[in-house]
Image (tube, rainbow, N blue to C red; front, side, top):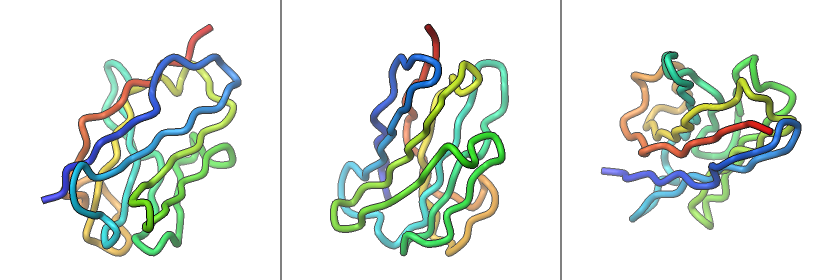
Length: 123
């Protein structure tokens, strides 16, 4: 069992950057691929980014590609999502999730999910 905790959400101005973090509340998730997802009001949860347990093969949704970076520090047991030039359409609850698969490709590949952190982009 892996319990995940997201942090770093809040109110952000359009054009600013935000950094979200994901960490296990106990134990380690260093052998899990970690993904970030988000769910905006009235919309389905969607994929944002993913990284393997070794920190390789980052993958991004088209909507954040080029302005986002997912990274992990297994020594510190954290995975981060840096997002630059945020816009109101980035407003959502952001979730991190853990998968035992090497390269998870869909939401059902993730066994464990955090509770989410709210990100609101507004001036």
